[in-house]
Image (cartoon, rainbow, N blue to C red):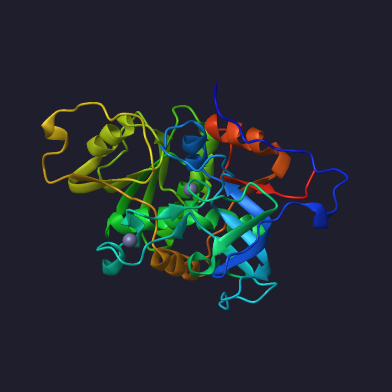
Length: 330
Ligand SMILES: [Zn+2]
Ligand SMILES: [Zn+2]
């Protein structure tokens, strides 16, 4: 049986009666305004990511308004709107943390996985890992920037200066990355589930020069590809699609097994790499860039109590852009 998000009806409860965690000294307590739904949430619920905190509140793309600051939390004022991302804490002392690679910290804690997250009315977070958010975006529009946007941006950095770039899986992350890539003068080739005309049309609307089925080759060789869909065989499709020297970036935290493949697919100095988590620097860079592009997020809103419906639509590929849960909406 699959795990589910437990939601309780809140009718008749005054806000003051809602359970709210207490912020620790360096933490802030936020009232959640929106929390976007990410593929990683499904991997956690499905048990594909090991060792979650249990019981767990999932969700790591949180937009919230600060209602209380801990005793030593002075970075933000009460009332400020902030974003809480996946990276929730790092040790600050290991070789990775000290070399600008806190995303690889072995002791890192993650929002909605090893820390309680944003499928809730309130959340606490270490103030050092939160971000101020650009005013351009509403709460729901800002939420998907916090993982789909950030991880997508880190994936794009890994793709180097590739001019022709393929995006495999045109969901929340790709719909943001496509806009950034186009802004940077790159050509985007979008690959969707075979026959998903709607997603292909959506990709073209966002500036993709070509959109087609993921099991078909693009009309020309690509310089790099990012695989967002959690499907191992797409790594091979992407290797077939990239030119010599091309790089295939795996942007997800989990994917099905990558089938064995002949060496000639990798030959020609092609490479495959993954992207793990994010650094605070990625967040700062991307959140400064997004309003300049400007990135427009397409967000489907769901009441918090409909979390399982939103997750189900994501699983079935029936979302256009991103989904966000909105507490207090019916
Ligand atoms: Zn560390
Ligand atoms: Zn995510």
